[in-house]
Image (cartoon, rainbow, N blue to C red; front, side, top):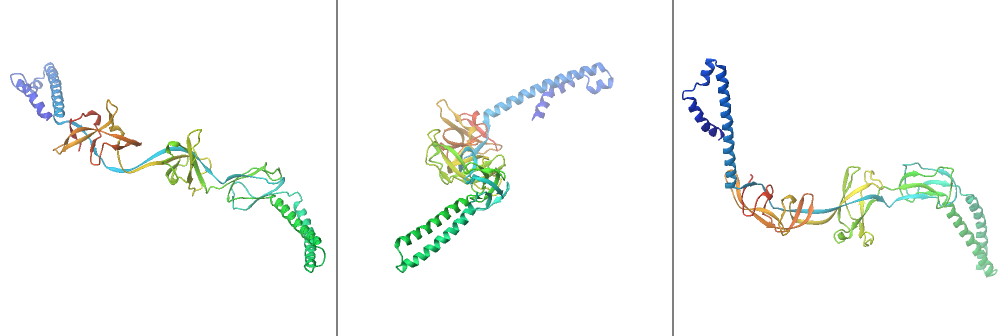
Length: 390
C-alpha cells in the first residue's frame, strides 16, 4: 500500500523530469559536478516531502479505521474453578520431647556413659552419681530384714498352733513389714543415682562434666531431644475461629531449608487470649529427614476458605464508578469477521470476595460463559464497538 502511495506522489516529479530538464544520466554524462550536486539536493528535498505526506496519509487512515471498526481488545471467557484461600502466619518449630535432664540426688558425678549427638533409647543409663554409701546400707538392712522375716514366720507357725500370745505375733509381723518398707524406700533413693533416659532421643548437649558435684533439681546434666514428634504452634486472630479448626489443611514452608510440606491442624484452642484476641493452633510436622530442628522458623499457609465452583478474574480488570461500585467490561453480541471478531462492550456491576495473588473471587454479577475484556478494559466505554484479538 505504501509503495502505491509513493508512486502516485512521485508521478508529478517524473513528468517534470521529462519536460525539458536534463536527466540524471545526462548530467552524469556531461560531468558537471555542480549541476549533479544541485540535482541531488533537489531530489533529497522531494524525498523528505514525500515521506512526510505518506506519514500524514497513514495516520489519517489508521485513525479512521479504528473509529470505524472499534478499539482493539483481548477477552477471556469466564469458567468456574476450585478456589482455595489461605492466610499466612509465621511460627517456630517445637517438640514436646525436648527436656533438660537434672540430677535427682546429691553427690559426685562418677560416670557419664553418653556423648553429644548420641542416640539413646528409653530407659538407657546416661550417667551414675555417687550414692554416698546407700548400697552398703541397703545390704545391711537386707540382713536385718531376713532376720525379721525368720522371726515372723516362726511366730506365725506358733500362733497357728495357738501357742504364744497374739501381741508377739503382731510385733513380729510389724517388724518384718517395717524392714521391707525401709529397704524399698532406700532402693528408690539409690535408683536416683542412676540417670536414665525418660524417652528415646538424641543427646543434644552434655552439660556437666564427670567428677563434678551435683545437686538434686539444680544441676543440669544433659539436654535430650526427640525429633520425631515435632509441631508448630501459632496464634491465629479470633476472626478465623469459625473457619480454622481441627483438620484444616496447612501448607508449611521452611525458608532456611528450602522445603515445603502439607499438614493439617491437629489441635485448635477453644480459649481466646484477651491480650491479643487470638487463639492457638497446633500443626504437626513430619520430620523424616531429621533436618527440622526445634525453634526453626516456619511459614504457614492455612486454608480458611474453599469454593469448588468459584469465578476468578484478574484484579487489574476491575474498575470503580463514581458511586464506589465495582464493575468490569464484558463483550456481547460477538460476531466473527475476516481479520477480527467484533462485539460491543458492556459494563457489568459486580460484588467481590476473597483475593489470592493477582486474582479475585466474584460472588455476584458474572456467570459462567460471560466474556470479560482483559487487555484494553479500562480504555473502552459502555456500548462501544470493539475488535477482539484472535
